[in-house]
Length: 180
Image (cartoon, rainbow, N blue to C red; front, side, top):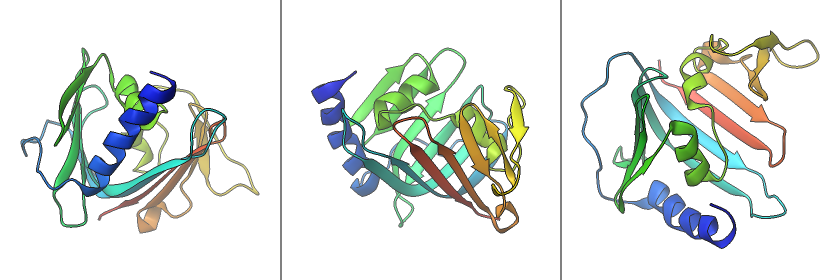
């Protein structure tokens, strides 16, 4: 989706992610990892769209192949839930449900850019995702690695902080604070 349609969807979804009051989804955890904390995503302005950002609590559960990502407000109310399996992905908000062929398509629709959610399971632990090539960063860059077109700063991972940046236009920055 491009142009006015995507902007209209973003205009509907971003406030929903940040201010909705209805709880969505259920609390049954899929098998696999469980990582939670605070997350912010900023997509810089481009020639076709304005800058946009989302900040929320997150609860990432499951595996890169099958899992769930809940985004919540400061009071803990789930604002949006993404669920995925090898065959499809689904976004649930207080506005309803929408299906996608995969998780990349869901994030593309939601934020206007694809985010490597599958890689986040490893990135949030300070290590490269095993399913894609990576290379260590070298000084003067902060400690970390490059993978999938992103530079992942792990210099503060011992304190629970991670910053991943994609410099390809439009630039995207993901900042996460993982709870111990």
